[in-house]
Length: 101
Image (cartoon, rainbow, N blue to C red):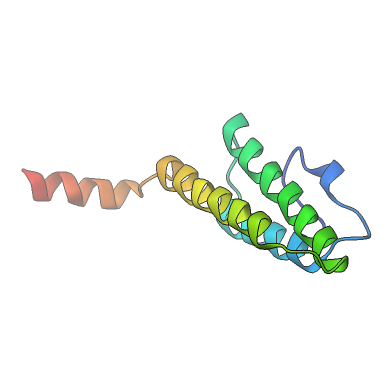
């Protein structure tokens, strides 16, 4: 699976591990067609790098718990980033305004 997000061309390669692939799929599910601001790009690229580190450690049979904890923390940052930047549907916004009046 190739990342289709702008600015992620360098993050695609033939040697993707399972966690890296899963992380990219997760990022794409959050981002969709949205344009990423620099902060969101940083969060996403950091997650991909951590997932690569996880895959490398896993192949060597090393402990991956710390890396997975870091990945989880950045996942929570991604969720926060996209909850803060998602737009409300104008129809819903109108209904909310009417309900408050």
